[in-house]
Image (cartoon, rainbow, N blue to C red; front, side, top):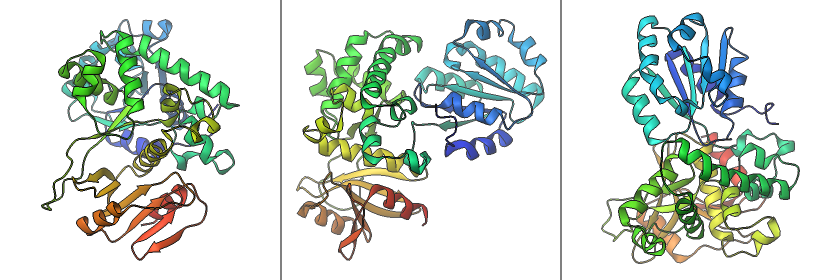
Length: 387
């Protein structure tokens, strides 16, 4: 369905296969890891792909030493690597024997156990790359619709589906599968209802400050339990915790992280928002746009770092972007006639920011002050990438 779309990560992946014996692509299920790996395989002379969820492929590793020896000159791709965590020590042995670059390409989720086992076994031998759902910059012009991308999110099978109803149904099935199959397969024994309820509460507080005590009280779970569940959703790429920007000023700063459902399509499914008409009338509209903008920027400019800024007296910036040793302030407004508050101007002065943007669903950019430009998301990304 999406094999004709090049992913931004592709060139970096090819480079790392030339520099490391093992490269791991980590990301949520159905984000396009297998498609990307197979497109890379088409460029490599000897490439072997095993889907470890397929019993026939899994059986080929019943004697992994023999299999790896048989395909000693190939790049061996192991998809859903979390299914066979015991293989990491064997990979290390094989890598150390041959000392050849580009021996293994591993695909899987970034579960805590997987990261720990791979980093312990393959320290110095492995490169980790993160693949998110589609970036805005990865979509062909004739396939790109801002409103569709915002509504459906970036999972390929959601965004590229034939209509909103089918896309919504796909996301509902994704959520169910994630809760009932993927979580247990990671070796995590948590009632799926607990994770679903927490995920729903995170959706309702999307764009707000994390309050673990309140979440715990609402769900009847302890602080530490809620903290571990939140970390699980972070490590499986379902939510993002945006850290506060802690400046050296003497202002009283909010130091709690903000929480976002990373994919707006998943957010809208959790909140039962099936179409754009429902979204436009929903209280989550502004926060949804904010999360969409922030996630798109951080995914599309991977060398950047993102924070939010808020003080106790109301100074606030939605996203402080640290990019190429310069700070940019970004305010997100889901309006074609955006207005910014006094708190935004105060925050610019607090941080001495010289270039700021108000990102809104508009077409043409225009300045509202010497430092501040109202701009579309697409034009903002183009401007940043040219810097």
